[in-house]
View (cartoon, rainbow, N blue to C red):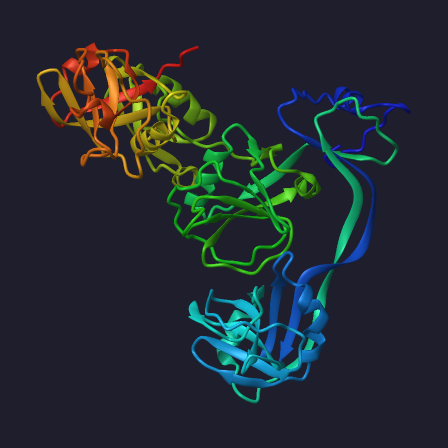
Length: 498
């Protein structure tokens, strides 16, 4: 079990193993049972193309590489026929493809077949060097692979350079009859291996990316939200801005965070080697338990151990934070206030930066300044996702709103919520005093946050009509609002309805 040899009686099941190993299992994560491990050479979806300038590696796109398998050997010995700023093409060779007369959008490092004069007798192997739109006399689905290594060689290739050899890539792989389960009554055989967690080590040179991972796995669990041939992924914090910190190859077990474009903030763990990418920043590695990860399916929850806990003090009292810092060998720098004061800011924010520095500065407020709110997750989930992200409740137990306008019984706050705010949980007859409203995109001030002390039958908390108002929750401690003026902050903590 997890690398530890344990002796059991014949006929024992997983629960007997857990009992003998004194492992407390409550069914909140999967484990893997691995039987009959053997090593075997396995063909991958990758091909090595050796040229006179060096080796290029490509990876076939699933369900798109069949024609390549039939024809790749035909390009051995072929030369560069043309090279420009967009592509480099080898050939021609005769292929049995069906050229089409249409323009297609090609991305950087796409690999495709094309033809001269729309004749399959004069076909070419083409590598895209830049994103562009063109017609190359390609089949209906032209792109069948992506360049994953040797990308710099593409720009070095010129006329008279040649392909010396093309061959599929193989790797040694441990094959086993593996299954992932929560069934503790599964019978075990002599020599079986049971894996219960991933042993992960995060990179100190990636403090922001590592903090992002610690935030996404704060309960020492990671849910597998997507499974590909080469990776598993989690998108619990997709959409979060994450800076690029570490460049390097994505080897088996590497953990990355996407830093640009669709899926920014998505965490990837690689099951197979991939090349380096300028949109994937390296944040850590799986040291043990990869076979558990490789057997995991979409929706499985896997236990992890990073060997480090996120050092977040926001929401703690000064007294509790002081004990927490002593336990973690960190110096707490707190200038004014009482032991019961609540921490609302910390610097540095990142765990590895705090450990590197050995201390953390905090700002506090008196306990009686903290207000409770009840948020309507069932009725306004999308708006609340934006709200929590903007005011900090997505990352800490306390959020902050700045009063920027106050008149009579209405308070309006910064920041404005960013993003598309569709109508959600609109009031119908009356808005109760203390309810929190967000102006939706039916009005020009979309994203404005407001609270009223008194009920209103005409206008929402942000001063808009009911149709332009999303009600997201209610301020419980109304007396905390009445004393605030422009420029003051309202600090809030969620009160659970249960």
